[in-house]
Image 1 (cartoon, rainbow, N blue to C red):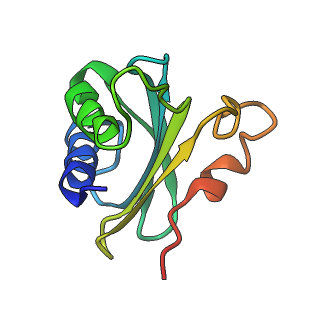
Image 2: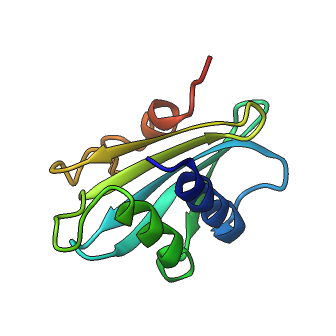
Length: 126
């Protein structure tokens, strides 16, 4: 894995993130794919005090960074994951990207997960 494409992905998410408070400390974004490209982005930004805010980014605006990232893992014609979980702690400078290959519901915000998902996905790096 090239850290350059991962940094590019995180940079694109941060630059195009909408609805985040100015002083966010960490973020999580779920990128959903339609087998060819990213087609949905949602997540949360967290303040240093622990408050979460729902955020998003335009799939169109981040598409080239996402493609560079996925191209570093997958060959042309190979199936993309159904989603990626990108966690980034701005204060610690740490990040993690997790692939989900089959379970489209794993990181979805639903009435059942509404109360717990922000905390479940919150970046927790030592």
